[in-house]
Image (tube, rainbow, N blue to C red; front, top):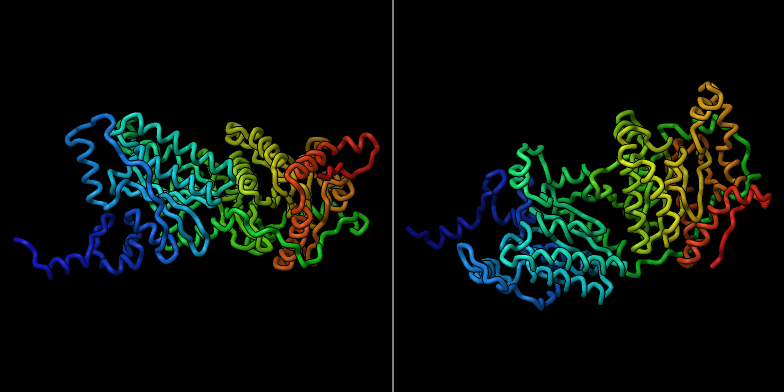
Length: 568
């Protein structure tokens, strides 16, 4: 029996959620961007529906494709390859399994390449590689960021080794955008596997996942059949990947446009230049202008759990902070946080140690003591800043790098050394600010700046006073004497030329009035960045390296305490 037209229309008004099996009203589902209101499952979208959702007004300039899938192997299984292609084209209305388009996201121009899983499972063939490469070429021509919306079951078997070569082809296209300094954002939708996951989908400067989206090289069935083990709950889901440092963030579909707009702002070619600040620089730059303070008292104030943290300052000092997570190797250290933000209307990268205000927060952040993955995350964000030409601001507050067995086994010393080296060679202005404890190499790993500032109740030291007392006095109770001997107070650090300025704190310390403290930091950092804004890349790097080569050498030669500065 066939359905009447009215029955067909009624049936079309309802749909079954494939995840929770609840019946959904089609019009409501469309209003909610095809996200189930019962379980939150993000239903698959066609490529053109995705473009209509992301770009302003649903309007976009579709970029014509120049390549089409061909049966170079004469491949046939239960059907010939041309028959499968014809079915996919009829089912989706697409010529190929991806669409490239140019448009704007909340006014920010971009180019997108969007895959469609309904077209042969989003498999990567030569034509799809051509769409991605063509989109990258348009980005290069127009100096625009690239957004890749990824979904795939893997490389297209019907094209054999030519499909495999698309991994190298698309990876090269991403490298071209890296060399050109153009932002790339990858949006991972469910599922993304195989050759796509192991090429362009995971090479974006920022990798965003929809909730529950699965991403991996090998699929779960292949893994289970190969290793004969039961996989952990949530394996390869966005939530699992975020915990393991493999993606930057998870965003529900309703928040994607706002998130993309903030990211595109930072990566736009010719981003808003830093304008001269109208504020007076509050930083004190002469040691004599500072009163002498008891070193041990300063240590106690620097360690106060009530002092604002990096994430507090990210909200109070900067605008539009978007945290980026993970070292992209397999870990995400909560003791180091960072991301894109704005100051004085101009984009920059903010990185800092993160402690907390409660015992639970401290434990979750490992008391601000970073593991190797924390410093690798920081180095990744520094390289992103260098690529996009964005200044870097670091906020330092750590008793030191984590000294545990696991940290050592993962290369703690190497991670710190590489972070220091990366900072030293950055082609952009770098301002470092010690907001609390500046402990040893764990602090210096974020401290190689063109200008280094310190808050009035912060410290910077080669070792903790307790550690020094234990080693040299064999008595931890001598920590106050060690603190005085180590020269760790802002006044002494300014005298030695280790810091360039001391940022005043409100009466009672930054914890007494966090907003006033944030305003002082905003003024001091803004003034430093304004001074550095006109420097050439070569001048910045040469001056920074000369600064650190001068420490110790100038003192040993009796040449004074101010590091050498190279003007270019």
